[in-house]
Amino acid sequence: MDLSLPADLIRTLSSRLDSDDEARAAFPGETGARQPVHTVYGGAQLFQPDSAQRLGEAALRALEAHAPDPATLAVALGRPADDPIVAALYPRVVEKLRREPVEDYRIDFEDGFGIRPDAEEDAAAVTTADAVASGMAAGTLPPFIGIRIKQLSPELRSRALRTLDIFITRLVEQSGGRLPEHFHVTLPKVISVDQAAVFGDALDALESALGLPAGSIGAELMIEITRSIFDEEGRVNVARLVRATGPRCIAAHFGTYDYTASCQITAAYQGMTHPSCDFARHVMQVSLAGTGVWLSDGATNVLPVAIHRGDRLTATQLQENRTAVHEAWRQHFDEIRHSLVHGFYQGWDLHPAQLVTRYAAVQAFFLESLDAGAARLANFVEKATQATLVGDVFDDAATGQGLLNFFARAINSGAISEEEAAVRTGVTLEELRGRSFLQILANRRGR
Image (cartoon, rainbow, N blue to C red):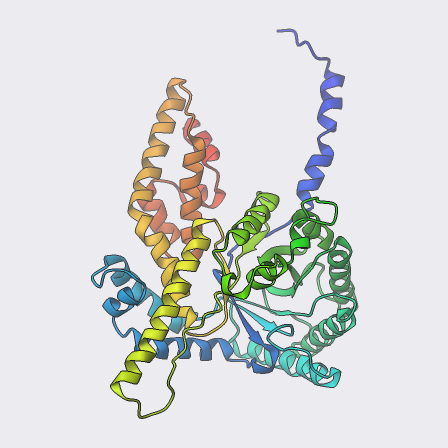
């Protein structure tokens, strides 16, 4: 059959798409890699080599004190006492808090540390670097770890870069020239392409000066000011900031309270579920879709803490403590679920007792849809394969991809193993890891 378009014209038209391919390649992300379900933020002055284990122990004490059995936890979360999902997840949460209580920890030199004399922050950068080196040697660090520096505003940029330099230089010296695996540096309140570019250049320079492999320091940007979403000319800014940081940028974190404050929302109405936050998160989501850059939601700032302290509390005081913790747990649980429903699979935690509801919410989100999701995916694969084999059009591949995405996220969260997902859905391990429903159909067509 003769073609209407000459070969040289097809090549010319095709070459015009090269810049589009290059633009996509500018986003590295960590596609297919494990994404932590949370990041725990703690002031730099508090960090110890075994901070993760201490947080886990505190979380288990809170669980024992305020929800010693599945029925009590279910009621605390606003569910029936005999909820089978909570009964199933309760031992999973306990096991997680014992085995790996923290997935990601960020040593905070910003809000959690505050503005202190330069000598004090210099000293804290050294001692925390030493603590991380000790944790590396002892094997006590969480799977992901890093620091948050101060913003690169005119008043704080020199301080931020100095802390970054002191910490990483000291850590490399103390650890024998290594960084922890999955080591990330978080830049808060980034608003301009220049700030993002300077951040990336500073990390480049540190790696070069210290003999570290290029890109070994992961970068994260905090989207927490209105100008982070749209620049001064009304252009969507999120992807531009990520691109300016360079190939090392692996995540964008949303900052709930700074963002709502920058929207002039009063304190009584600032919170994770405010419509302005949904808008900002969806802009982030659309801007970075398909790039591999991780998205993380913010924090619930109502903490599950007891009202009364002491060894000899009355029965009334103990009940008031439990009620206060339960109310905070329920809010945290509901807000995590809100994030998950909106496609944000990571968030911040600020208090050890929040680890209980972090893992409970993640487990519940996946467990309650697991049976139906497995049956639907298996059925979709079967029907789509039959349609393909007989030449019909299967026009619901997007739903099949959504089901496959569910299992990819469930596996990432630890709610289900790869092997169990493969058995329940009829999809092979290789196909699950490939995360492409269309590729599954292509595989079936070739059989």
